[in-house]
Image 1: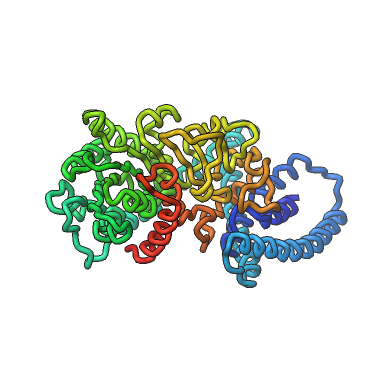
Image 2 (image 1 turned 180 degrees about the horizontal axis):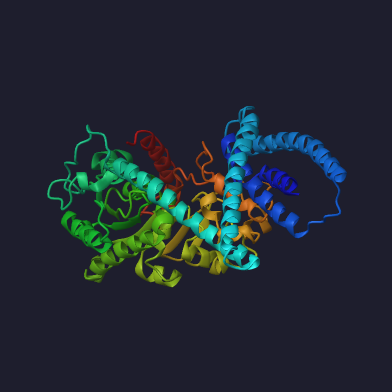
Length: 532
């Protein structure tokens, strides 16, 4: 029974999910699914054990299992390959290599064997522990105590090895990456940029992503060449963490930098919450800078030097604290300005940055009363406000592209061009850019035991018709989708120049046209290829 459950679980894991999977990723997903199926089968076998089943019957069952298993696996592997090829064609990815099949089989078997040996070693240790305890306690009690003790010891060891050793190594690695940057890129010479003349922060303190963000700032000449009119140097303010845990102090320094650079005299201030490493989407920041002739200021602070997924696991609340601290600090100073001379105050963020940026607000009305517009790109499944807007969407609208309260304030879009809603989109406008096949948006723990709405309703763009929900396995598949290689713009978690199209709808400058948007998208694509 355990082998049968393991094989069936591995078969289910071969079915399509949100994005095409490489052979190695498929091997890992199938191996984990198989070991979970094996465990379930072992438990049911123990529960339903029938001593009347003879050895001859068992031998026949194994032969049938072997024949059905081999034939079924061959069929499923090639059907799965066809599904994967069709899905790749649909999302614009190149065909997979035929070598993905042997990679999936061989690596999957190796990983399953390793996981099985590990599980059996833990079980063997648990039985040994129970036997020792049975010398002092009754058998049933000793089994219970031994099981609990085994689980506790395993957890302690995992924490010591994974969190202590591996986590410490990763921490040092990412800290080194955070400090790394091309030595031939000098600090900026413009006072409008952090780490420039008169700045309150140093070039070294910005961290890698902060230095990239500042170094990639467009010049007034470049913007003027695009618009055909006089432009000003856009302001970019960035405060690195330098290992500090005081987010409020960073936010206060950021406001002082904004004041120093004259940011509150600009037309637009963009409060951007970065991802775990401090990355800020250039296509979103530049869109406003070019659209408004450089008469903008973008501000962000670094709250971690770890990748988003590690940062979220280690301390997801820190992203929220950063988003809240920075906006509140900027907003507090903004309120002190004469009402008729305040710049437009907007908020932006992508992925974990959207998760953190939402934390400054309690709901749609709060956003509308304190900002001039918001753009959140690729929200995570844990975004608080996004979950509220999606859960309470209007009847008949889809989870993959919801309509909330008729789209009066909050709207959703796949491309940034069209935003579903009833009537006029009132200002200020709050926009979410999201894709129906983005695993970041749909990786929710509830998928383990509950069919997600996006699979219960009409499928969104890019979600395969052959994808269906299976307890536990669907979440494993979506987890594997996180590392899908080569995903093109417009699919998954890749948004390309869509933020430019979105800002053109949310906060266009006076006289801005669709033709201007198309030119800007083309310009951003060129700049993206030359970014540091």
